[in-house]
Image 1 (spheres, one colour):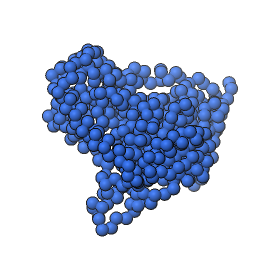
Image 2 (spheres, one colour):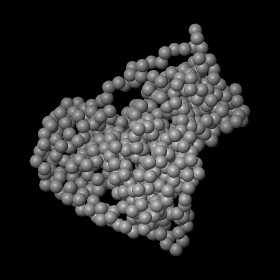
Image 3 (cartoon, helix red, strand yellow):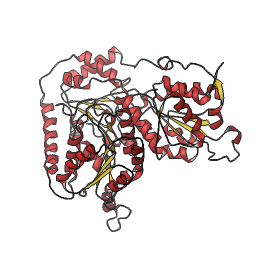
Image 4 (cartoon, one colour):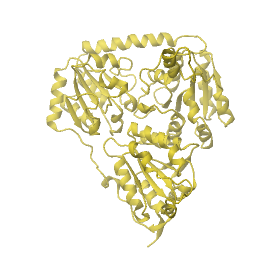
Length: 542
């Protein structure tokens, strides 16, 4: 029998999963894994921080629906990856993190970077395991993927000693992934579908609300369902893009008004967390239909009159079949929500026409959104400026807005964009940064340059941690500290690393600067001096 390394047997499982890219920061404890990927023809993209490697794997998963894979070395490599895994956990992203571990013969002897890694990840993964048997490493990989795609999905961690990776084992063909775990998306039973359809038939003020859990559905006919019911639809976080940005029933700025006035909410993959005031934003007497592939999310914080563990996309298709495709006459409720939407949008549009310098945040947001258009993939990395810009972005495909989500982890921008550009080299890929956020993984512009990935970044630079400064002023107005950053030349850093950089403080120059950045063909950063926002974001992470 021919022999391969155990690392190669694990990589064969990844190939069977459709994995074609590994994100990593190299280290001695993972060299057999990296080499196995090279031998298999899997692209290896190395970054400058382990957090960025995991963020990139997260974005890969969000964009493809496949397993995103990262590898980091032992000890500080593992600790550096924790924030990336926590972000993937909150996004329900099926990510596999392979962590190198000291050799078995050094266990409890104080080897280099010796550490028991799994306890770090227990609370933020669906499964974590230390693989001590080289002959079973491929089986461990199959089990990891099974856990990663269970329910909504989520990250998993395999902790692998160096000598286990390097040990020779016999070759075996990995199982077909479609037979190694559930291979049918669960829908609702006919009685439940009929019960929801009856609620729809009598509702006067229905709303469809899609959340993060919707992203992991293979498809979801939300436009058709909203049209068939004749109701407004709102999307947050990873659900953005399931309805095209300019659809007349898609709301953006009037979500709280609509949910607060509703008598029926069809919640598809929604988390009733702080972004919805833990469900309190919904009218107290409204009926709530809550559908999620993860049973523990149903009824969390907000009662579910009908709560069903099912694929929200499959359920949406079933409900559409039950209510029938049609074009009901526009209701007074839809007109009222649209009027509220229009009032809020017109106020923002008026501010966005400002010619003041530094650039008004709404002017920044409008110019940036119009530049990226509806076909781009945009990563969002920050607080206030990202919340403002997200309302203008023209997201029209699932996964094309890559946001930090409820975990609010800063530093996701460049790694998310790196993965997106590697997957879609012909697409325009952008990053919208706050200036504080840029400081976390700004060095990943080095990775973008080295791997020839011309991403276009734009910083809304007010020289402060604005969210915190506003809060600090309210609480301790006489002693605001640790909130000011200064308007730093981040563009010059990108230029020094081999990219294109430009500073803008005249709003008339913002769009031309973005065009020049695109024309450069280089990883680019347009550093825009914006005016201070006098409010704190109410929905941090959208």
